[in-house]
Image: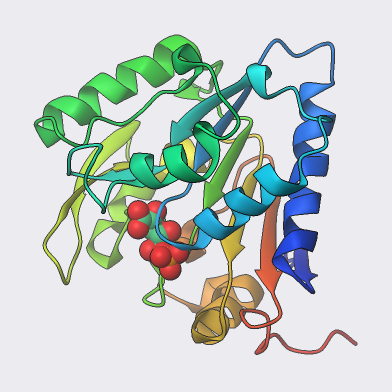
Length: 244
Ligand code: 6PG
């Protein structure tokens, strides 16, 4: 199986400049009214978002972005675990993204009802491809255990699900989560894994280089468009096999 593009950056600033380049290309395309992006959660994206804000030189039309999430923890928006809260602080407020362009997952609501509500919003807001809402870009993180979004080991069935969103549970903390299903992830026009730090080097090398040999949820990420890219720093790339 052909290895997807793996981009290794010297610094987070370089990674941010690459992301800004993607965003400015998409938002300056006159044929597009909006550009839909699903943000990943966890710690990794925060530092990148802060760099994006710092390095932004006005080439991105931020008013064209529709902001969604790949997953959310079932906590209120002011809770320290809230993915919305950290994105609001690191990028939404600093860039003054219009309220009506922010599609927050209501982590405070009853999880099953929220998964249904968010699925409806995706179906109403995004173009539909093969019966599935299609994002322009989905950003994904990667856990050291091989999970992505909030699709953990026991949830791999979500890659064959006809649902758009589902409720899952963190295997260690028991925390309930609302996550996009694998079907929506694999129908995105583009998917980018954003992974930093040496502790993730082994899992990155396994999944990026030989996904078919592993049984990790993240190894099932294979967008039907074929557009999957890995954005890595030197730490997370440190166990990749040298290219011939
Ligand atoms: C979440 C995520 C999850 C995250 C990975 C990596 O809400 O936790 O979306 O999939 O991306 O767990 O998390 P870190 O970036 O914190 O290592």
